Length: 100
Image (cartoon, rainbow, N blue to C red; front, side, top):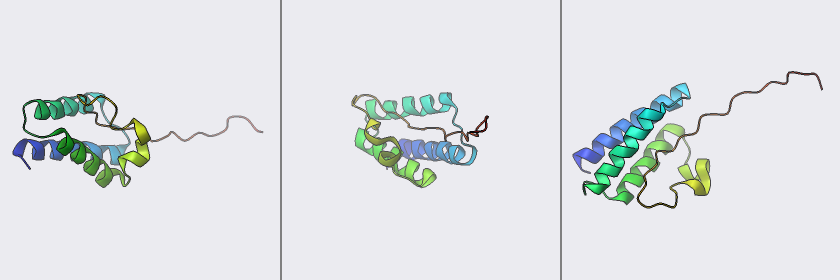
């Protein structure tokens, strides 16, 4: 694994660990990591397959579930040029407001 890909993996792991503990991910942090991943691929520092495997591994480690289980067919997407760092916020608890 290249130093650049290892750096991406560390940053991505930190993002997913924060998400697991707080339930929130700042969109800007996700977009920055997506740009970083695309730059790694464009500059030949990592293959798309290596980046996507890294994303799947970090997600599984932090969330305890595979990306395919959580996001289904929507991940990794149809566009081979785009790298997405997936995240969905947990569902908010809902309590009835009227008596039924």
